Image 1 (tube, rainbow, N blue to C red):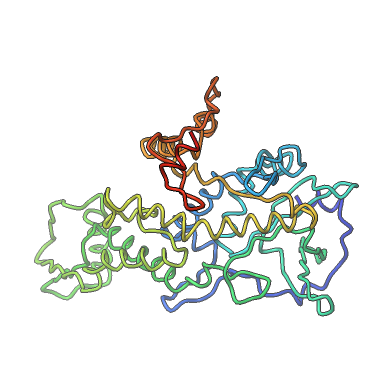
Image 2: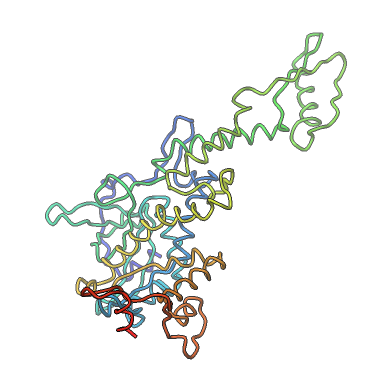
Length: 408
């Protein structure tokens, strides 16, 4: 990718010794394991949170709209940016994959970057995802604007301004960069990884605690080695669980009891699911924790996921797309907006009930509802319905009956 970019960009050599510490680097934890974005992906809960956010952004399409009046708009399909955000970001990256990659980077590193390649006329021609580990941001001391430095290895780098970099940043104390959720949650993720390793070792020994082999005589090193190999071969591991134990000579086996830590492992792992999920604000049922999910509250939790987790992220996407891809003059006429209706498409009963209410209240006409379902319009379907038991509100001191007669 960067070889392709070097043919188009005037790279200059920079001193890489002054780069900032890359967000999301491996950091030690109290649990004894180092956590980085790569190791965090081995944590089932952290991976599930990143996957949920990235795939939700991937399935929602941002559309570019043109304002036609105070209460009217249309899709600006004739704008050169429209196919980049809805069809293909560049010749080799579909728009959905582009959103998936940047959504993964955003959920993992707290920042997502893409290079904005423009043609000779200054029009946006391509959007190319960038590895967030190769991008650093600093503030120009004179103009106070952010300057992006993209490193390519071998001491090569290039400074880019805001118009050349699509930057979607998350929550963080830095003025120009978001903080990595993995870095902030490293203690919770580290404990979760430690618990997974502990459970793997416990069940790898047949889901039983270790025991003690007793012999009435003194055991030589050779005999001890032979007994260990024989016992492990025939009775160790999950595949040998439940076999009848046969001991040699005058030996006795004393089984040890589970410690309090082993006995509470399941509860500790369940708590870590909650602890890790709250860093991404992902509801528990979205990561497979269904203990508190019911038919009554599943819809409410899904709405909370959309309102409190996804909508702030989608707002950041829309604003970043507008400030980077549109000129200051165009921002007064055009704007980006995600269609979140796809999140409710799986519930056909709720979707059609909402259509019915919208049509009966005159909010949508039948053809508009059919368009939202990707169905062809029909003659007469452009008529808006109005309930016959309603009348205009009284104005200028007239009664509702008089207003209704006048409207008739």
